[in-house]
Picture 1 (cartoon, rainbow, N blue to C red):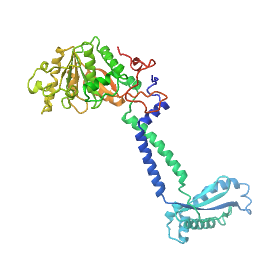
Picture 2 (picture 1 turned 30 degrees about the horizontal axis):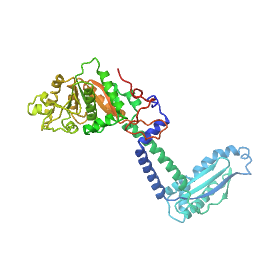
Picture 3 (picture 1 turned 60 degrees about the horizontal axis):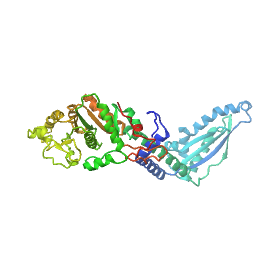
Length: 461
């Protein structure tokens, strides 16, 4: 049984699940960052660095300098560091170099650094050409020494001659590559978490059932749409999902107890959510309890029940408008399930606006059975989806285990004032703590004594 956690609590296990679920996004972003960083590293020109060191000593003849030398030099060094980058010094250096270079270009190649522990100024020159770097450092040092000569406060002494560098100072390949790899990993993980947050991930049943309103009738394995009836019933009767489907049947009975519910529309936000399979199994399981049930295909633009039950679709719900056929003459019994009758969608209508007239025939079927289950259109992309739900006594929303999807579908139904009996969630992934993320299957494991169906979803009264 998955331990209950608050919805807002972030745990390493939950983060690991999200990262594993969005591993392709994480990997793609990490590879993009790694490729971009490596390309930048390979194409960035090498920079050679030549440095000279100048010591600033007190003038021995000036007795007033010696007592205050530490404080005096601390205040003067920032000025001397700025002097190296001043336009006056840069112009003098550019004018004396043996190669052509502008003062503006030198501004990006020449700078000074101070040592906090000593009265020393390092003059640093960077250039793609190692010889040019040494020449810039030599000329800048000479101009700097000349500028400080005879100031009466300090004496500048050169004790570190600039040399021609043998190897580039930047980029440092190993260090830069390590930073790029670390950045790629962090951005990849962050992208996966952001993607999951923005576009919705597969939530755990406990997380989503606590958020979805109204009550969740069932959390079931993702059923395949447009399957044959035997495949749908076989998936229902398999060992693992049997209790989940039975719990859906029980919760539906609880949710409608004491209410006048003679018809219900099963809908979803979009195709592929398992809407048709849920409608078939709900109708079939209620018929197996002894109820007379009519299953109607109201997805007139994309019908599927005739394929599920291997029936022709020459007559159906659209025939009530196309040919004036009474709805009660369209009932077709299902041999495999006693008490269940099916009404197919019928021929496609040339005028989509007439589909609404067909859906208005649904209430006439309520007097012919204990319950009418309507396999309605999907809410997204079909204007008649809300109409199909509004002409019945309520709707069941089928949604995947994605937080945004259930909210979006419920928002459409509630804004249209459609009564929502409950929600059925599909695509269960029940990875247990201690298992590797992503090892959860869409088919939940068989229940053990420690994990009964009621542990996963208690019946709703």
